[in-house]
Length: 568
Image 1 (cartoon, rainbow, N blue to C red):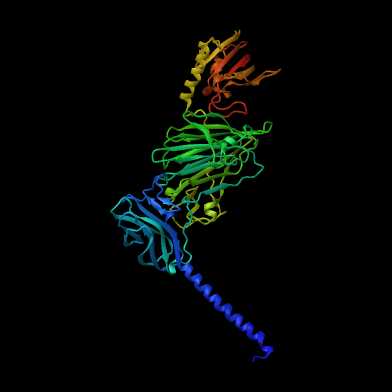
Image 2: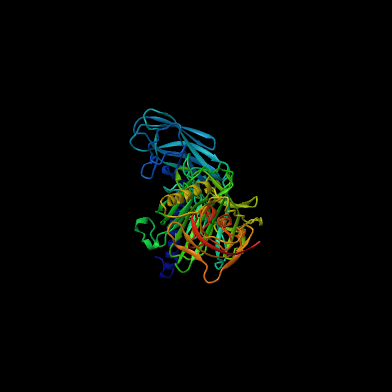
């Protein structure tokens, strides 16, 4: 019998022994669990990519409907250890026998797939992993007897090399979206954000969105929508919290379209918040630099902001208005500025996307420009969850660049800051270089001519493309474009007669050459002491600019102008 005084010691010793044995058993199970990794078959990629409707990869079925012998499958994963690796595959073919080739690091295995209604674990063989990093398993159909090549449930990897192995286990196969955020002071009143975007040759993959000018209420950039279609996109979010259906958004929260460029499609968007969407189908080219400008015109009285998006087309050396929207419940300046790369459909999420962003500037309320030379890196929920780790950012040739996809080792961490050298090349926005000027001029003349034919307006004649009516004949000399004038005036919109500006008790004085082209040309039909009415096409007024909270892009303007004096 053990003395009672020794029993606690023995009990403690036995407890330690039991816990030690339990620890060893658990450790053995843990090591064994880490020794085997199962890659779900539905997380792979087809080369060439499958159509959306093919259901080649299905979370319930794995790989099914695989019928094209010219279409191969790829599975990418990251190995943190070297050593041996045993490969197996859960596969079946309910129709007939078939044959596959499985390739890993240039080592090929031939797999004979038996006819079976149940999945069978087929051992492929053993390889020795010599290098850590990303690896790929390629599966090719060699022969088939029926319609289907094979159905695959999973790939099984076993061995020391699988310890710490990383692969995406989720249905979503998109690469992580990556962002550059440009820090600015919260007190800076930003009325314009300028950025230059270049997509290198070979990086313009289908299902890519390269977004140059992002801000709190919207985003602006270029997309590759299909092999045959590319777009320039500009969108503004509604106010409120509706995430899916714009039909549920109250009128007081809805973004309002004010103007759009020729050929631009404008409608709604949903499912990622709701708002006003605009896009222009345009064959932008990889290797070319496209310039983007977003302007903001806040109105605190109405608690709204007008956002306008313009893209400079290097092919024609002109600016293109995409759209202008009025955002309710805003009244603020541009803020939260950023850029991003997005892979918006996952069928080709294994491909790398890359974009260069350079020469960022903001314009303040007082008209001064400030260069942005700092940015920080971030990524979306796919990156935060660790589902995808192939992403990065850096500075190259004086520009920031972002990349995502391609299954390469990451080159940046979340929150990492980057600085580029100052270029000191301030934006030079020449609004007269309007890609839509000829088309818009034709539209404006069509409206004016209809009004003249309907006798809705009366004109004396036209001068340099401007219709005019002499309201009072002057007694002095004709006005010249180099004169400094003293005038009374009133301006209103041709479309609805709304007065947007006028003098009051006192006249105003200014050099004529500093005013809009329509005044410079049209007033030369008026004598000093006279009064004239000018019908000014938008191209000769403010063109595609959002001039004020009332004067938006492409507005035909009407002015009554009384010329009191002219100094040479």
